[in-house]
Length: 323
Image (tube, rainbow, N blue to C red; front, side, top):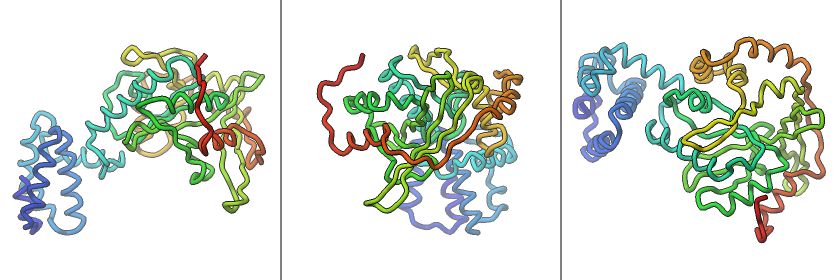
């Protein structure tokens, strides 16, 4: 198959062809088919081959997994799925990605156990919570954590053999993670979203960011104040388990609500969990959301971000114990 399409595209470099074959042979069958479809689509976009070249030789691709791909329409649907999920040129195969993200999830949960006030969020959680097979590429994990425990988490991570605590504060804008927990030497991480618990039992999400020149930077925060009822609908106290390890996550309803009208891959994630949610709760998010409010561009003179920054700049890690 590789020789056939290389000939159609006038690719004559034998070393390049052999490397392509070796790379495909190291993949699972389905991962190799994904890579082939993307490569052919790239060649087609460059006009190196024609649709007729592909159609005339499509049997070579179908024979790789005839149980799953029975026609060229099946291959086209798969390519469209890959495009819609932004999986055209990933840093690793889909199988490797799924193995890595699950490994990180379990190892990080083993590290933090039940010592932290935190909740996972994001599309990955819909798959794990419903025991649905992972289907798309996942670039990271997302975790809401009580900012009062940020230093405790940093020190715990500093003593870990598997994770590194990384600050994004020098490069981030208003949006994005202030900090992330990177797994070993990979590009995969657990991105942190910070929150505060208020006396009225509601939660305030916080987005910290700097403005100004390097020597005169001012720290600001955007605060998103959730009412108690909105907080209760979003943050679930249910303890779930994955491979016997406990964790908490936001409600499936809140994930569905945030994804149902967003990007194609988010809408796909929403559809995965649609049969597992209470639509009455989803509908209440619009109603209760009217009781939420934001405070934007609030100057900050003293915060957990300042303290964490000082620690990262060289504060030692002696005498640390988890209580």
